[in-house]
Image (cartoon, rainbow, N blue to C red; front, side, top):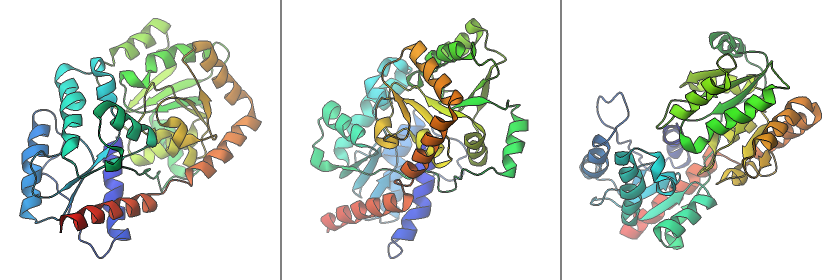
Amino acid sequence: AGIGQLTAALLRWLPKVDPTSRYVPLRPVGRTRDFSMPERWWWDQLAFPRMAKERKLAVVLKTGFSVPVRSPAPTVMIVHDLAARRFPNELHKPSAWFYGRWVPWTLRFASRVIAMSEFTAAEIVELLRLPRSKIRVVYQGGDDQAMPDPHPHDRVVKKKYQLSENFILHVGTIEPRKNLAFLLRAFDKFRSRHPEYQLVLAGKEGWLSRDVYDAVQKLGLDEAVRFLGEVDDDERRSLYRLARLLVMPSRYEGFGRPSLEAMASGLPVIAASAGAIPEVVGDAARLIRGYDEDMWSSALHELVSDERRRLEFREKGLQQSKKFSWERAAREISGILHEVAHERR
């Protein structure tokens, strides 16, 4: 998901833009799956600082989760969003405490906080009372391997997942803030005019997702909705090229990475005007205020029916996506790391 993609990109780009410095990945030996509580707490607070001390690092960049309360090296922390702080009732209690309370509290121990958007920076100031002077905004890059032209792998993906010629795509974890039960109701109304369309949901199952599956059953959409689960990078790129639209009805996004990936692939986007999404898409997507099912259904109809509008958003999206670069993000982050290391001397 987002943290993993950002970490992988920075592992590639930081050494490229700053070749005179030594970048050391800190990773648990032999680990094959992500941490859960309480292992996550142990890694963040004990193992991670110990490894930093052993390697005598001047500064540590942490791409997610909590800041070590005690660490021999100053920490620069990347914050993706404060969704758990905003919506604690949408998480199980242990996760609500860790992500919604503990993680935000530890940000006070960071030397700098990097926010992925101006929206998230404002959230940090408002909800956590951190001084704005401690926060830097760095926009992440998109998928530098995305391309709008058809690829032979697209046919493989279409056959593997039994996709129809026409489908609307959503990419993201299945969890409450993605607002997918609402999307299913809007799609059901849209499908009364376009019964040939599928709705394809690509992303792993998150917490409290039962209402999404219940909505499929209640609306009788079993044959029209495809749950793909996690897909790999190449499959995701093919899905963007094969789809007619990307739809993002999220109630909250700290960045909204799928919208950027879709635009770079030439796929028009319909999204909620929520969180950081307007920052990312600019005027290159069809933004909708509010969550009226008829309004969303009409917007879907408009963009699948009007080829001129589709092409207009396709071209605008391609241009908008070029404003985001991993090279630039890495240079800005590298500068922040050097700034913190210099202060320590």
